[in-house]
Image 1 (spheres, rainbow, N blue to C red):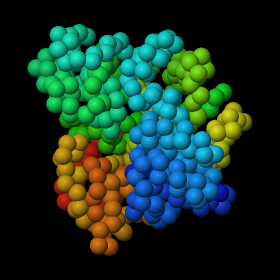
Image 2 (image 1 turned 180 degrees about the vertical axis):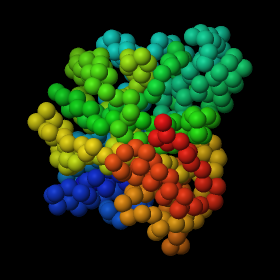
Image 3 (image 1 turned 90 degrees about the horizontal axis):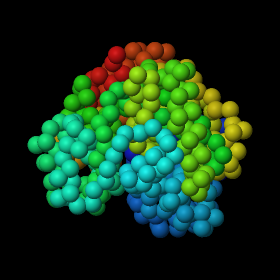
Image 4 (image 1 turned 180 degrees about the horizontal axis):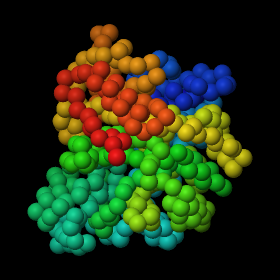
Length: 417
């Protein structure tokens, strides 16, 4: 079986590792991949957003299954393009990918189908938004409507900060065209949680739970990032909460897909806020989360390739998906300056000294003159598995400290109670 994994980050490294453990014989490619992925798959020098070249490659190599990691090619319609050529794709079509590509599209979907979420209003011009400053009080949540690499959300604590944020989004175009429309939401309090689900036309199956950390600094301080670490399982998930998520969110979402003609096949990532045991939806993503995938997939005992095929055959309900009881902690090592501007090309040392049972997923690296160097904001995702969360956390931290590159930064409180 020939599989092409699209992407070159930590999420894709985790996907490749999981697929490589399949019982079946697999020939795996990754585009563009990275030095870590290169030990598991043949890397192809095609960028993840070059959907035409990726389609040509898949056809020329008679690829049996394409697994799309990042959101950008999904919103560009890579699934539609591949399927027109007879290539099977694990990942939603362009119509369904709007659930991530447009915040306002998702909010309308949630309200239409009575799925609990924060109140919101959307704005397409700066002046109207400035007149509405503080519409829901403070903190004021401002979201760029389009894709912004996980960084398009600003939580302004006061009017002064809100006006600066609006100028950055709609005046200076800090997030490019993603900020042409801005969604303002009611600020929700509680505990954030990540719920990733396998979805086909008839079934939605939640994966093992996880907790993500978006802010750059310990104690949830500083600006939002694409994610500075995760752990699994999420300590706030219990049977009562899982039942509420199922009845109030998962089932209405699947029914909403059917009513709206959204033929979703792939992974639906649901960002949640939990308060007093009640879940509300913060966002939808239409692919594996990053770095959620790094922690969740280490707990998957079933064959990921078989699950993906079941999704595409609309027989997900026939699958018994098994998860192990271990805890996993993932700590992201990032470049200095991230999530703002940062330099690349710093040599990464200590990768060979990491414990053999710890996974170091490459998120932003490349080979340069035979050395592994930094090539992104998030560089590595150091991920440890153990019987308890505290053991996994201590093991991950201990191994982070064995790795170094100039200006590296990471949070020390991932998984801390």
